[in-house]
Length: 298
Image (tube, rainbow, N blue to C red; front, top):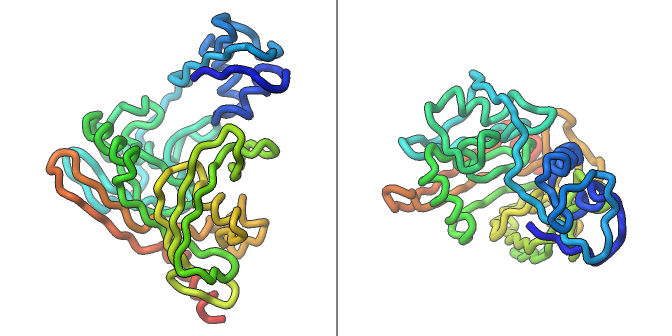
């Protein structure tokens, strides 16, 4: 990645935090390791960028992490020699990251499988795509690189069916709608994403109303793109944040022990080897259904 500086002058590490999706500690290590160059030269974190500087970023940097297999129960919906479809529980992190190297889906997969794809490096073996830790539902996992690359290309071409159900605050009057709004990092809160024209990527979410209640609406969301927190950001953007969302739900938590009311219900794809279309459907978690029923009963 190449960034040409055309705006404010600031410390290199601080400047890049608003430009790329990476933690501050990892970014500083990348700079120290020489994975970030300014005008072709290795510099310090404290270097003050100047207008017309050219910053080159090698995004292949990976911290050395010992990821161990762990005997953690997982719900495998489908498995063959090439791939798995896993129904991830709410609260489970998909892959290890700084400060969270155990208890993840990857740790569980490494215990269960003899082989996982290596396309996403040793930190994310087998992981073709992700969902948030507090989002439940279906995920594709590749056992070899050939399968991984094929599935990743299908996702890139938007040919993978991905449908979510979500309970959102407020009553949505339209039966269907399309939210087409670019998403980027929130400059005021690095842990959040937002709809913005600055350093953003296109994001498209299609929604369909399933049920309406007095204070909320149950919807189905179909993704055309896969941006970080996409559904959560888009629903907040149109004034209907997801119920129980601890980040975008404006602190209106119904259950502090459960995550946002968002479930990856359906996933469909062409099997890389058989070339047959496969589609899987999963029921929302018990707690999801319990919370939903409280809205139905009002």
